[in-house]
Length: 99
Image 1 (cartoon, helix red, strand yellow):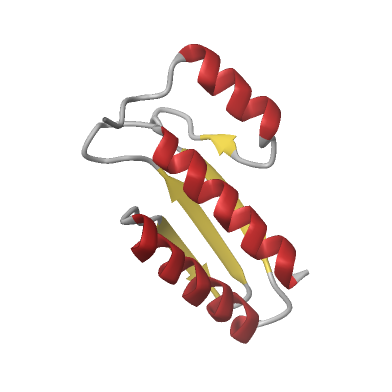
Image 2 (tube, helix red, strand yellow):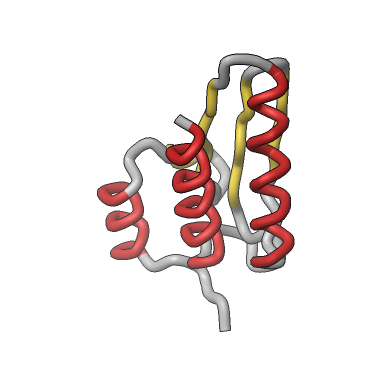
């Protein structure tokens, strides 16, 4: 069963993935991605959409031209879970492969 992250798991997340920031006032993490242009940003979003479908865990995101902002939280549990960490890791791997 998926449960909210413990205090220790949150500290480990912050240490292991410092580019993901905790969102003030919401139990979520957030990261901004910048691309060369809209086409690259949209290609990235397409890859993440496929991963999200496979994991059955979908991000909140916002796109303007070359920028993609992503927020992760497990809404049915009201906060951060291991599903969010797993998706964040896959998002980072996908972004690194494009660089």
